[in-house]
Length: 315
Image 1 (cartoon, helix red, strand yellow):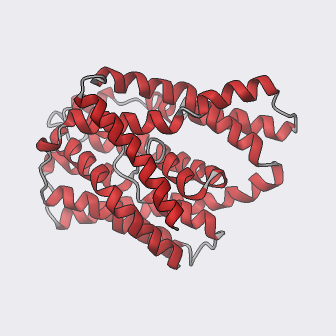
Image 2 (cartoon, helix red, strand yellow):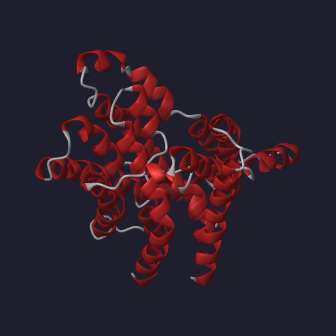
């Protein structure tokens, strides 16, 4: 367990490097955009492709698919819980949708993948992907709809939402890379050495670019601008207490292998999706609330994850 803590600290050290280099003006907001594009369009697709082709065969993968029921049910229950919470706790009318999205959906790729790799190694990747598929699907459908509803001019906002846009986001390059890897795996053909080596160089950029991007975002959102309030506390409660608790409870109904359950619990207890503040700005929702929730969730996570791991290892 000590080694897992050390690995997590190393991962977050990369985030602090991104923060420090932003402070030194080496990185700008534009740098985060560039890194995100490289990560989402090149590093992640190759990482997904290589992991599925190198670590699984047809029978092993098919045995995993049934495990997708836990992310699907747990996120549905978490979503419904957020609706009850925001009603009982009187969450501000113009941030209810943003609150629900952050309460329900987690950062499964930018932070989730590097952290799971640091803790569990390459064997965690398929389970990370299963949770990622469900999380991404819910985020770019229900989640974006909820954020759009926060706009005081709801009629105009709703008109800008189109199912094809959500579908494009769900079938991201990372998921397409996974699907191509899956198809390749089913053929039984070995990946050519050149393609494997080329892809590995790009895949190796995933962790540093992810954490640099988070560090840049935290810096430019401004730590001094973070403002804790009751609604942000509710988001953190959903992210770090209720979400993993619901996953754990569901494991008694839907038994899964210990490693799968551990990865799902870690994935469910990730910080806020880094896309939320951007979408809040686009849909004229409460951007300050979204940015503060993201900032607090990232900064608290370094202290939180050792506690979560201690609980997981004790189960």
